[in-house]
Image (cartoon, rainbow, N blue to C red; front, side, top):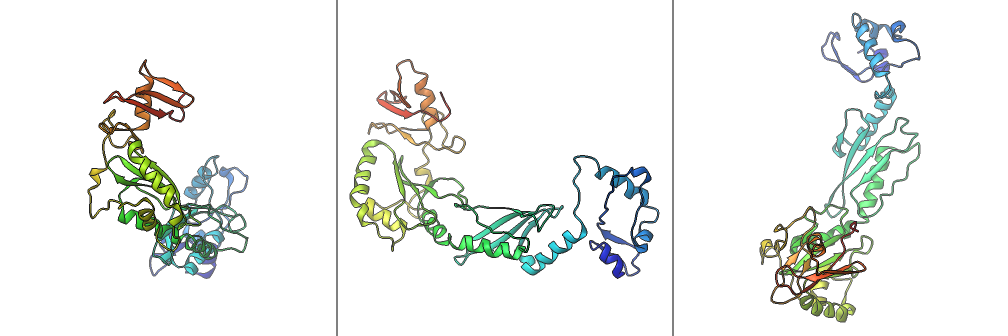
Length: 342
């Protein structure tokens, strides 16, 4: 391919040795003149290639010039972008859209966790900073200057995920060695785990991404006669927490229990349906309200129990708590008002 033609249109390539058939893209700069009187200004090689097709190019220019149509960047934008990807390594590229505007780059931390960062380039790239997003439990920090490149972005992203490697390792142990009830499909940004302890009894832990081995925020869920002894043990043994041990081992020691695991229990043992809607998952929620009567212990979704009690003439409300009777055993039961309901 002639050097002049390649320099003017770097995104086309010859498909035969005679260089009479090409594939790719050409960039057309549009001036504010009527497309009916527009002229093509290019090198003689391009004019020869477009001979007989100039009217098609003019039609495309007229369509692309209409409001709302996406404009293309100059050739230098694409050539620089391809050069940066080559320097970074094509193996780091997970995705790039047809407009060369949105990219996904992959990275792996020292613990083997796989990560991806989405980069949305602006029309004035690299002068204008791109938009960055990633599945992280903390804000993504990327510094950008007009001299920055994709390789710089990838290096900074690696620093971000490496600082969180221990956090994901802590959650990996919990996910692998316990029955996690929520979230059903955790993402890299999720720092909460609801772990099954027994039938209709669980503990919700919130791991600190920056200090993952410290005592997490804990909330015990279940019937009060079961949860109260566990809560007392948690408060009494909190001083035994050892940051040098794993979070799971610490919780086992502090609560003085053995967590059910995939090797010892079936998950169906903890997936008890709601006593009102007869389903386990209601959108993303699972039953987290339990009748406190030891002879009943029926679980309910918060939203289901709230709507049920609100419809009973014998129920009463004090602030954001509704008091009523269990739909199964008629013993007293309470539920907090569902957010968003009056």
